[in-house]
Length: 494
Ligand SMILES: [Zn+2]
Image (cartoon, rainbow, N blue to C red; front, side, top):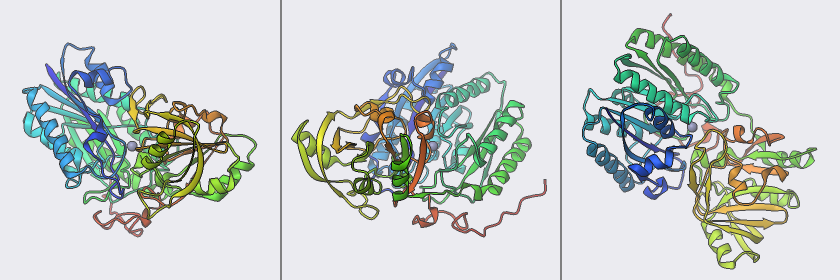
């Protein structure tokens, strides 16, 4: 049989002032897509691993990944969609389709990109062909996705460590479907609920309990796959909300009970997701006083993994005032400064304003005098186990600036800051720093676990703030928790 595989993965932030462009996806097609993912710990890597052991033929479509940002521009999304349709049409009646999607991606005119792509695939391959798709744990699952796909399979971990395994599970489910061993049937429960990502880790706490229950159901073979989706809260779309999806072997009643029970557990634990943030000055002072470093200070409100522009000076500014002579590694996006530093050359001193330019509503530029330490092409390869491990990524061109003992990594474009390799690839060793700054709600915890002596999540303004009530939602369905804190759900007696 011939199985078409592909990936289009991006998370969107509808509040971000920066739109996503076609070029941000770094698309590769056909054999190049296989080449990129063959030994990568991605969903596509998992597809290839499982299908490679069978006699089925693999028909690769395309593979693209973009860092989280604002919605994809209208024309750019039309190009993404039409290329996807063309490549799937070219396969000519595949026997099945395996797709890696995010599920929390939007385009300027499309609030549900994954649903749109799945519906497009369905209309090309017809109603009988199996389409199995993987989704990020932060997916906003919609009715269109559930109607269009044969089965949806979500990550089980946050920080996300199981992209590869999710790909494997989806491919294995597809093989069982093709052989007739399983007749997948999905059950879906949508909650009027959004929660911040900071307390959604699957190692402990409320979300870990839900995931343990999902895994128990799978282990007992009561369902093929059970996924709990804690939607990332930066979407402003009409069908917004956390959800649960179960795929049973044609047992809709069992599936309904499973998703209802998990959804109820999710709802009842909603208050446990509230986040405690530390005032930024206090976090810096405590880091300076601590016996040993490195201390990781994260600025989730400017998380590049959550679609913020990555140019907030919310931490940089007080750090320059309070900790100038302390070793610290920081990342910031500022294409103008990169250009200036490259023009000045390594060893030169530049006087300039950095950051606070993309989102002036939330932070302002800061004046610096800095020595140019290093100039690079900004390409680096994920090393930490889990997320995209083994995949090369780009942040445009980049420079490292020395400001006293601070190392400021400045890039033309955002990149995710969760992997210490971001700094290491640019000659900065986080283990030797007193303070290591990241811009992430949670994803950094796994990769930095063995390094960080302490972690602070600081309270700075930005478009990925966990203070959800301050975000300018306009299109989410109401009532929804926590915007409508007194909302009640009537659960059926079970
Ligand atoms: Zn995620």
